[in-house]
Image (cartoon, rainbow, N blue to C red; front, side):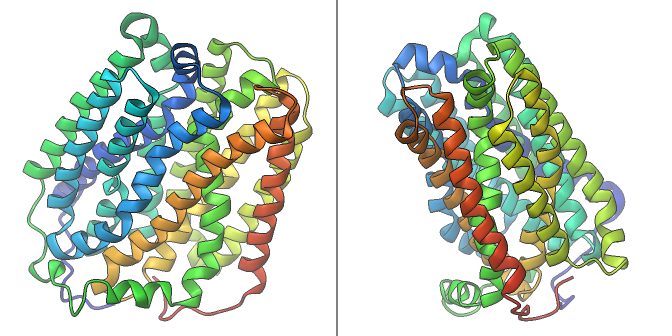
Length: 412
């Protein structure tokens, strides 16, 4: 990779850059996951079915996915700082709309605005890190960003469950709106100006996407992102909660505590991955091998979850969280195989696949539960739906393992 546009920051400034971007991603992940806890309140107030609940939560992902291609162009043209700070204000407006909603349609609009607003939280960060941090730190930084994101998910479990009796689900979203405004201000006012040539885009802004999407190596990992990674995040953001309550018979408080433990283990997994990623590379464990091993472990654990009985079975979600962390290596690995001038578009093209998969998984899993079950909230429907998802993910794993295309250039 060329160094003309890179400017590695001194440690104090590098920490401030990371903290500012991480604050936005903390809120992005929190808002992605909060419906898993407030779902009973939304069902009670609006009479939602599984399909409607899945569609409502998926509004975040479809709006998020729709933003990825223009986002990549904006990031490469205007820079991470300006784009992310502006979009987080849109997310704050979406939280306000959600808090004021008195119909399912208004809930959907608010959720979609949130998805638009946080669509750049991770991509803007990873793109900026490529120019401000050394190459060997890139996958480590991606893992640590997901540690921060998982802290956001943790904040939506037991803390939100405790807050609901005091301020209600509407109050939760007003608090989120205020925090998003603070994160936007931190990014806009606390970060340095990006290197001058970073914002330059050669030729048509869309031609870069043709190069990215036309690369077979992009799709070798992309099918895994579209299915395995997307499904896990869809489960984390919504369906783990209903699984614990419907399939395992846990009450709302116990389910919230289990979700807290699940997200805590996930956070620890990301933190550990951030430390060991450079070591794995030095020992010759390539990203394709590490990701394939992690996905294989995920599918074995999901198969056990699909058949496990009793409240103890919630513990199986904990090793699943550990195994799923390896998927974070894929996006940085693939994006770093493209030139620096395509950084924003490479990251957002990959994220488009993930977010599209999240939308489809979060919505269609609920549809599948209703179709394969015997009633509205059917234990059998949940188990059958998970088995269907395992088959889909197994096909994606086969593509990763047996399609031996090489990257367009050596990845860092």
